[in-house]
Length: 117
Figure (cartoon, rainbow, N blue to C red):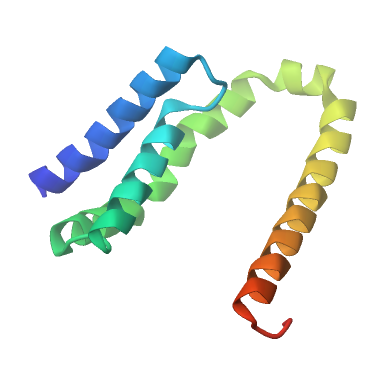
């Protein structure tokens, strides 16, 4: 378990270093997740220890949303001030994301010769 946690935290650390070095507006942990994914793809998937550790962490994932919820409540005045922009941006970005995902999926399915669903 210690080895698996070390792998996860090292990926997050390296991702944060990459984010700080490049200044890109992408969170460091997202870079770390991409690095972890690349490593897992190269190794053919997670080992038993990493899989078990990740499953254990996923059981308590809901607790990680508590700080985000507190942040939203503490910034309600900012949300209220930008309500119109949020009301427009959230559905538009959701629909745009779904459309792009659908187009990409159709292209991948066509490339593989699979029938449309």
